[in-house]
Image 1 (cartoon, rainbow, N blue to C red):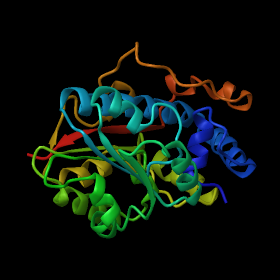
Image 2 (cartoon, rainbow, N blue to C red):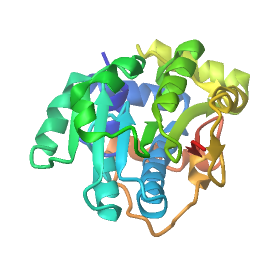
Image 3 (cartoon, rainbow, N blue to C red):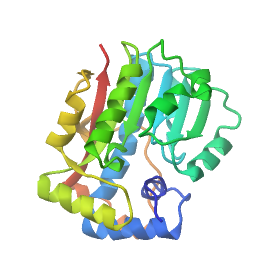
Image 4 (tube, helix red, strand yellow):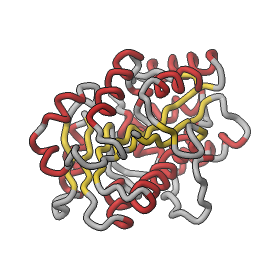
Length: 270
């Protein structure tokens, strides 16, 4: 079966994916071609979010939930560039992520990857190996980047976000992004397309996503929850690797068609 982590890797020009993942990406893009731009824009958004948190907010602890496969400009690489010695814990339920992550991080004592279900945050927060790197009595950045749509049940997503938020000390941050539809019809159509590929998925409307986040009691960092392409844009940030030839015809489709896009931002716990 395809997995979001390996499909995302293919979108980003990676090679850690299988034929079933590539086929699923291509099938999805024939229905919603703009989602390739959205995925790549989200990765550029990740760089700017982590850079802001490390360089401007002074955060040196990151919990990346639903991290996906190691690829370009990974959280630990960006964080440790701007905050030397920053600690990072990656969490994903795909065992391939664990295998690749351990290989990448073999010589990095400040970073680890664990296999766990992000919808069971209480277990993650209670793990002794997580406590070795993350001190929850100090500010932490918890990241849910391009993963809320992989939690289709609203109550489960709300409980996951609120449980993690409660564990954070004041001065901590939550970074998140979600695939959204321009209206209910687009959101439902994209959800059906993703589920048809075998994914656990829910594309929400902007209003639905905003309502879920509003209940967390956090303060949005400017410019708030927006199209990830509009969150503190930086034309000079490091570019992504090129996509594989079969995907090239879909590049740029999001410029004039945004039935579906990624919306995200950073929020601070007061």
